[in-house]
Every structure is written in structure tokens, then in C-alpha cells.
Image 1 (tube, rainbow, N blue to C red):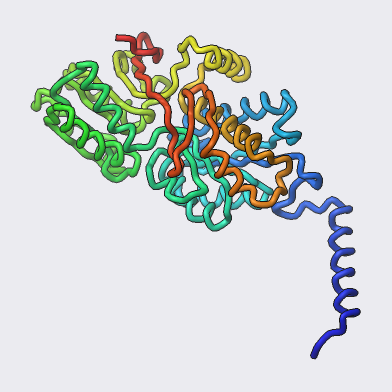
Image 2 (image 1 turned 45 degrees about the horizontal axis):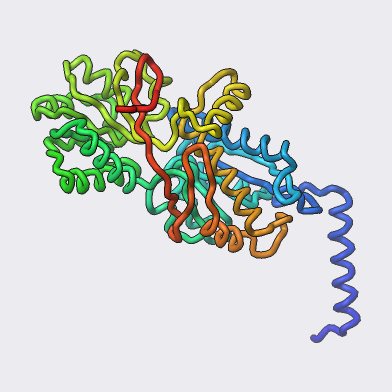
Length: 390
């Protein structure tokens, strides 16, 4: 049965009136946002509890500091930023739940996730939702497979290549061993490219020892083989939790080889039980807290003031830079409301044009969502990570 035009109009007016009533009553339905669109809701997820909490807390602190600074300066194009972070415990399933919670709360831009495995679990959903996503520290190449996703950190392949290049160019060793997590996308991705580049640079890979998530407590077998191999340097493309155990067990085994890692070793000093075991460990990173750049000095000072004198690490710096990248893209796109049509597509287009002078380096982005910036080497001296200057 066809409805008359008058009845259709009446039904539309009734629904419009009903919606207005809910708005006037201040309904708190999911996905709500400010009525004037002058608050842009930014969400993030990462491990705020559990073994990897140091990463998530650092990212959260960095993001919040950037949000506070931008809001204090008047916001972006008349919009203030509102930030919320959910704990995903670096777990894939919990990361999906965290993302859905943020989306239900009105998130328009997603900074996340912090860790690679969790990030891989949400990228299909952010693509389906047409959600702009920039991850501060999930470094697998696959996390930027979709055109709505960008990275602040280096990709795993780049970290592996850059590490081999640095070791060779600085003459740190000729005989190199590797201990990596074959069950982890982050670790395996770095290892694969390191192995290829090491061969290209003339490094002798004398031992490649793997472990898995189910066998990451006792490394005596791997270390025994590496000791027998005569390795002068041991490359650790792993997270600080396992690295802390390896360093302690290597010391007990009488291994004197150098150790070299990537961004996953950030946080090592706070985790390892005996800080002397980490003395001399090197890691490749885009951020050095003792750098003399004015923007870095300003960031470090503000971070220490905000967080009880704590020195920021690379993860805090990545979170901080992610917010300023978003702000730069918003300005370039001329976006003045979170309710703007085509928010994601306009941000994506702007990300491919902008350049950001971040605390982790001068950043621009390629069409595949990867950042371009220089890496720095740090070395741990007297319990503090400082720039390696040799």
C-alpha cells in the first residue's frame, strides 16, 4: 500500500522532532560528539597494564602532552582536541574491543595501536569504518597496507636494513649473530631484512638463533651456540622484556660480544634487574633525549615537568609527533569541524603533502603511509641511553 505524500512528510517531521528531543535532553548515546563540531575526538589503544605497559604509558603521555600544548595554543582551526586511550594489553582481541569502545565514544581519528600484533588485528576494521589511522610505534609493513593508515615509526624492514648498514659503516663488527622471535611479526620482519642487508654489506652472519612466544625464558641454548660461533656482536630485533633476560644470561655465560637492537629495546633500563648488564648496549632509534635540537629540548623539559621528572623515550616522542602530524594535516586540509564530510580522505591527501619537524626528526610520508626520517644510534652508559657519537 502506498503512503500519501502528506503522511510521509508527517512521519519525517515526527522523527525530526523526536531526534531534537533526544538532543535537547542531552542524550549520551554511543558515538555522540559535540553539537558544534568544535571538539575533535582522538582515540588510541595500547598496553597500559601487563609486560608491555612501558610502551603504552609512554605513548599515552606523549599524546596527552601534545594535545595539551595544542589546546593551550588555541587548538587547530578553531577545534579543541579531546583524547581518550583504552588499554589493550598488547593483545589482538582486546585491541579490537578497545577500538570499538573508542569508536562508540565518538572517536574521529585513531592513533594506534602501540604494538604491531594488536595493530594488525584492527587495520581491517579501521579500513571498513573509513577511520583515519596513524600508529606511533606499530612497525610491521603490513599495518600500513590500507590507504587510511600511516606510521610515525620506522617500518620493520627499514629497521633491519638500517641496523645492518650502521653496524657495517661504523665497523662495529664483522662477525654477527642474531637472536630473534620467530613467532612475532615485529621481530621476524626486522630479522629478514637485516639478514639480507648484512650479506650485501659483507657482514658474516655466524649464527641465527630463534625463539618463540612459548619459549622466551631460558636462552642458554642460543647463547651457547653464539658463544661458540665467535660472534663479535649480537643483534637483538626483539622487545626489552626478552632482551633483559638475554643480557643477564649472557653475562653469566661469560659472553663479551657487543649487543645491538632496535626501537623495541627502548624501556630496557627500567626493566632489567641489574643495570650493569645493559652497559654498552646500542640501539637504533629516531629519538635521542639528549639531542641539542631546540624542539627536542623543549619537549624533554615539558615532559619532565608533566611526568615527575621522567625522561621521555622514543615511544613517548612517537606519540607526541603523531598528534602534531594530525594537526598539520588538519591545517593543510582546512578542516574546521569534526563533522566535515570526507574527513579521512582529506586527511590522507594532506598527509602526502605535509612535512613535520618532529622531535623524532623531520617527517614526510610516502604514498604507502611510511615515514621518511633519519635514524640515530644510542648507547647505554651508566644506566642512561645517550647518543652514540663515534
